[in-house]
Image (cartoon, rainbow over all chains, first blue to last red; front, side, top):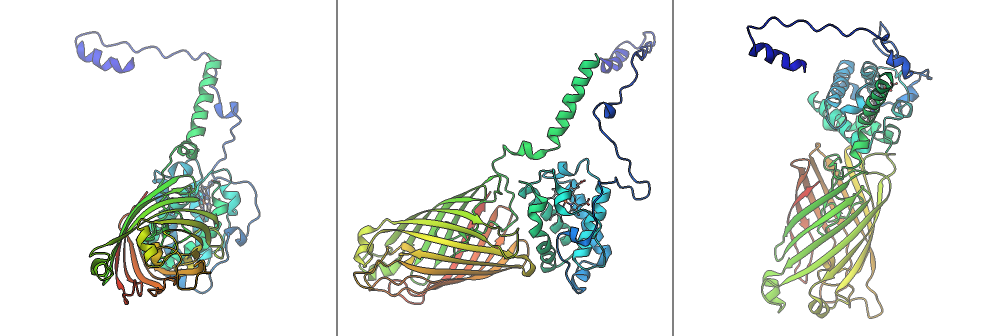
Length: 187
Length: 299
Ligand code: HEM
């Protein structure tokens, strides 16, 4: 009904200024719904801006594949700066992609941006260690499908294309990621 | 008051639960066009998913493992003395099963007159095929595990009297195929190998089995088809194919068929293929080399 008020005022310009409706009396204490439903909100780390995850054993093996040797691919991707632009862009595209954006909602994209960069940088032998979780643990319960994976690959391809990475070099990265399909998709 | 609020909150949080698992909503969607561009392959002149000449282990259509796919194609092959036109449709079910129909019209032009069939005589053939993916994936999974499929192609010549007159045993036949296909991403190379058990003469257009190897021979033989292709970009692939063929007819030698092709995904759903094709000798007319043009629309 509140939305009618401006119309009433406009229709009766000479009427008395309307009296503010009294605020409803606070009869009950405000309910902490997070507490009601047992939701534990983890605070973001003030330094990294990331939400802590359950403890896990760190190691490069979590990256899911052995890295390339030599520096050819690192150079093809424009070094660490180039890789970071590409992984950030791929995630930016995915968060805006109507096919898959819902999957990323409510997830810690600060952490994902860091770990995805680390993983790609590690696999391309561009001088990083991977500190994230293994692929199976990280994607457990997301319910992602083959079509979702293809959508993500397309976004990564677009990011690499925009960064002018040659198609052959793009495929070298995809060759490392493709065998992970069973760990990152569920159906 | 308090109770109904709780109910409301529960309903809301269930709402977000449902919407945060979008796959649940997408279960009902039957077409997702979700394959990566070009990974659906094109359509062979026999209507099954593959290259132009060789059947591949791929399943037609752009649907992924939770969806349907469908594709339609028209192909023309222009040879010095003949012209082959094919068209057909295929459906893919959950990227697992492919069912296809194709029609081949083979125009003999002047050769028809020379053979006493009449100028422009056409051999026609219907092909119904089915293919099942048994294991592996073209793109994903271990690099050493190709996508492996088995298939049947049932072919019926519509010119029974004439194909028997040229020496074929039968006007209908069934081919069995086993295909292994893999995209080796590290090298941007697609490789396919197919073994085909067949009696077909000139793909079946000249019937099945023959008189060349004596009355006791069924004419069934094991043939090989290979394809090797290089991906130049997401949309453009070039390659070549080789297909060995039976040689059953006493009146005419049959050669291996080969092609060099370029396939271009104009859009996600439209692929145009141009090829140089060499099918050797056809009905005593040697040196049948020419051009193939194919259009495929797939969802
Ligand atoms: C081979 C393909 C993929 C790779 C290499 C990959 C890589 C990663 C990495 C490195 C992480 C972070 C691990 C950590 O937090 O310790 C992650 C998490 C995540 N990935 Fe993927 N991913 C892939 C496929 C996908 C797909 C297809 C989707 C959905 C469209 C997806 C959605 C997510 C989400 C939502 C998270 C955050 C999970 C959480 O917050 O706990 N990923 N992925």
